[in-house]
Image 1 (cartoon, rainbow, N blue to C red):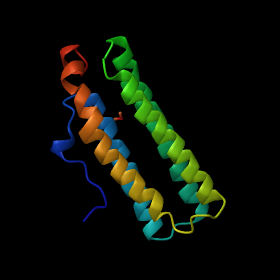
Image 2: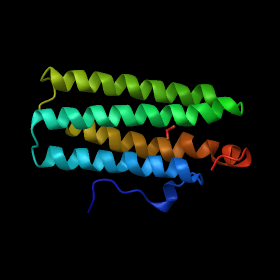
Image 3: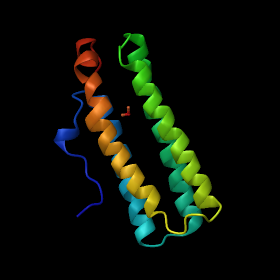
Length: 135
Ligand code: FEO
């Protein structure tokens, strides 16, 4: 069974965002597979970098619409995004400095965070953004 799989229950009813979430989930699963098969360090760091970049792009995409339509939960949502970025940067530094030998700590964190975030705060904006025409 895959480490993490996107399911319909994760849908925020906005196709562009569902696609981004699917891509993120795929990247996290790929990362996990690389950890499991003890891929080399450079490869792991490249995957982390790719995930960070794509996640930031995704966050900016959601935040752009929330701001554009004055979504009432914007500040709380943005705060969650910012905390995530801070935490991932800290984990990456720990990994680089050898404080985490195996990065299962990172994969577990990513899996739990993305699942809870999509099912929680992301779903909260769904109706609001759909009503404002976001597809
Ligand atoms: Fe889909 Fe708020 O991240």
